[in-house]
Image 1 (cartoon, helix red, strand yellow):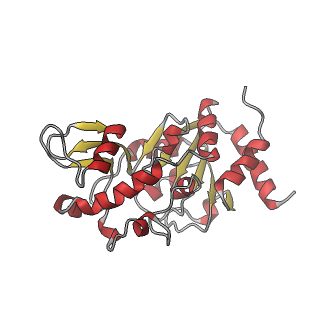
Image 2 (image 1 turned 180 degrees about the horizontal axis):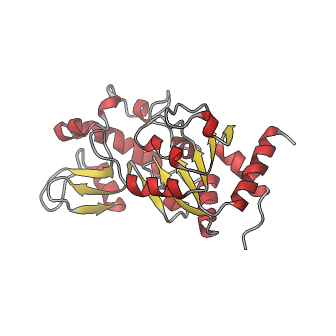
Image 3 (image 1 turned 45 degrees about the vertical axis):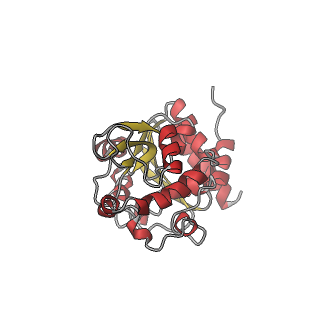
Length: 255
């Protein structure tokens, strides 16, 4: 049996023995769905022709000139409408239905976990699934937000003409759900760290709070200052979907 299959078999066994599993996910689970990363050579920053991408998610820049963000955001929404959840997204949703997975903590803003069937999803960096007026706080759902974003250079509130802002956490704003995410991690007997190098704090600090076993599946090494490799029970350097398809093949069918 190959190392790949042995690792898949071991995770299948760990899942079958665990009762409080938590998943922590990053960009890798979304790029597997066909959503380009932000910074790569074919990333969304390049596609949108942005000269200073570090300004996109800066809250002070948004307040001064929201058009910089919306140049990126229009391209992101155009790509997102053609993207579907991956096998791994649906695998996690199935584990939740089985009662093993207690929740997903994600750094992603694309809502693919919810579309894949997951119910308890803690989006620490927010989500594009809704938006709000920065002046009167009127909320807008995803469908209306998309239409307004694609039609208006700077989407504005129908009530007061204030600037709309997606419910995404910008640099300079507090992250979401940290206390609940930390509590989930502290109660977990198995933590799955998927598609992230754990480079962005404070969210990247969460997996290390797990007192149980930690499994990392990521294309590339970890860059975490909070999670030493000695704490990682199983590390798989590879693509998520082929690995979790192998895991699924070693698990008992859902009843």
